[in-house]
Image (cartoon, rainbow, N blue to C red; front, side, top):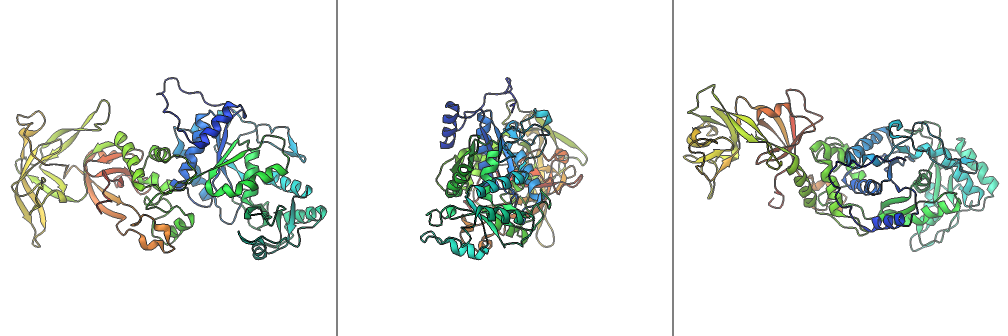
Length: 598
């Protein structure tokens, strides 16, 4: 496959991370064991991707990127009962979003046309299509289901070699015969069937002659093996169910362990990198490939510890429960750790990639403090987010010495982190809004915000003094009447006059009304998944919705924009619920870690 050349004008790339898997790849590159490094990310389309998957995505695509290689996005779709095209579409979107502009040049894609290599096994084509130029690539990923015909042929080859047999045990009996980790299993009474009988029965299984569960194809290995995965594992099962991608052509489906290693082989994968729970499956991975005596180089499997984050649940089953029981509003709820939820919340893909780099790659299971992820998010957003003024819980301030209808334009910095910061103008009018918590009628000690008779600076504008507090019949504050000292504006005669408090504000009549969703951690404990009744740890304050007032420039905000509402946090326009004239903003994260104080 041709790889896009590096842009000579681009900034120097950051040093490649180092870990034990990259060391193995480097050794293979140095020894010239492979013409090209090819990895893969192979999710099953039975749910939405979450941040835990991001570590594997970043590792596999990262290794391909660092070695001018290729990484295939492949759907290991061998179980039609649990899989759906909805998940295929969401996973494709999530992967492309996470690697966009970083490693998308090494994304292996299906090829329009191309000629299979001429190598064959048992008369069957034994290669993936030859890569075509980038302009001719399809936009779809790979599917294990596209290899069903090849996989069936490999299963026939195992039967012919005496390494597989058709078994009539029920699923319950098969499990009982398997034994336990400290107790050997028992041979199936059908284990000694002849090759001819097994070939006949397997062909009839494919033809749909038998009902679900009546028969299965099993590998013939060792029922006394200390590794329970080698105790004659299932290779094929009968399921009269249409497949989301293959349609209704098949009624037998390969098991993951059988399909995965052979899909790797068919795609020319050099390094099959997966999480640590598959370490015990590796002997079966190798056994299947070796027993088929395949002509080309075989892939090798390597394992690493998965990503676990405190205050978070990654179990697909439990995430599905949260969705189905309506504890959250769908798979893309910004409180969920799904990649679609993170994207909707406004978390940049670069922050997730940064987390993966910070956590590193080891074989040791551990729990990463969610504060590390939040730190990565803040670091990324601090550099790229435009600063804007917004008031979440408004209280009106009347600047009595400003004439009605007069507008004073104030210069405000867009982003002080920019090398050459720019400014915009925000309007100061007779009536403005400030945060309700920025005023206290009876202030506590060391309170430096607005109070009766006190002064504060309106950021980018001027100093104001509170002269009068207006209340309604219930005693609630309805407005504050203040005097503005316009000589304290930038460039004014008293611009350098100091006061201890500076607060944010917006014009009352020129501001934009918006729904703002204040998201927080979904769980109140660090390990919510430690018990089955994990929903009792849901945070009742994980979402608060307020009607805020925003500076006028935010009326034209775009979904791809990121903002720091000054003194409040980082926010992004909700891509799903916002509409022209009715903006909805999601809080991505607070400016500081306030959870410890809670």
